[in-house]
Length: 490
Ligand SMILES: [Zn+2]
Image (tube, rainbow, N blue to C red; front, side, top):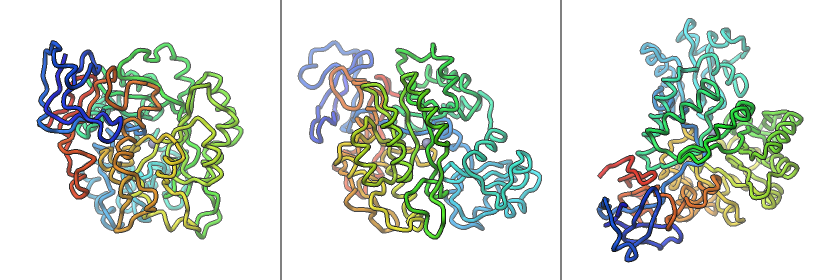
């Protein structure tokens, strides 16, 4: 039995509900304050005046993709086309042919051909839905593109040819990602990885193996491409596993704003297109019927307002079992009609507050009319929707402080974006604690209470009261999963 003392223990059942000491045993919270005074403790953890919270969870990310991101050249820091090309050329000399974090600076395949015609050059765009590649890549896989820009299905073809890795490398990436998340105070995540690497079964095995040494509460989303593999292997569905579980079936409905593939009601500014639907209507309906037949739920990626309305209509037509909830990943732009319809459905939203700071300033010019409900988080909360906080890492840095800060202040480039949609700090913290745990259906996660899991995130300073200019400098002092200290910085 462990005693946690000398700190402020924030239960997050309400903003001011705190305790000064806590007992845990066999991975669960046993009690607080005076009631635990006479328990037989075998170990004491001194919290040194720090602030302990329920473990922070990232409700949508790509763990293996994040591990890969941590080892490749990130282009996001280079602001001009010339700088990006220079970085690509120097990195190629060191053997790098694949790059991430590229914000479109109108680089074409001709620019890349000048750097190399005999080696592949692949620039992954920051939205992870598109690539810019040289002719060597296009010719190898037999895809035609005038500019070297490819998106969606072509991106997948190229990735399957050029970006596979051995099981050992994938394992290393997963470990790297989890270690980094420990440093950020993250104790769990809902990850979509199973269709991109070395096959469904191999990837599941890698998660199983890594979980034995690196505890991390992981929910694995099942990309619809591997649904058959999942159904075939259902016997190994991790039942009772402390760290691994399967989540909903992941479906991409539309694309992204920056690739102009998010599905909008009104065409993009100066264009005659409104975005795309990734799956044809008939294909999608067949898929939904199959998913429901197996009593599974879905998590649908949708960014555009027309896309979200159509997804809501689809959910209404094919409802889940009683007690189940579907998930919308992103829900970036919404219209009044969709808001009303969604309110009648059992859905939760996986949101990424950091998109406000990284995406918003770039995408305003894409809209023909200023959108009313863009990342409308306060509106969602006021209407009673359940919001789960996430980073979509590697798209955003999974440091939850960045997400909380973005949701609270909505600032970038000296501008506040839709002031009315700002959340309070308490609301924003709840996105990553109770909110992020609701889609797991585990009733004993997300705040601190007797019988709840001993997953904790310990910060140096109080997240609710630290001054704004110090908020992002707050440091993680300890990360605890299943009562074990997995990261320590004291
Ligand atoms: Zn994602």
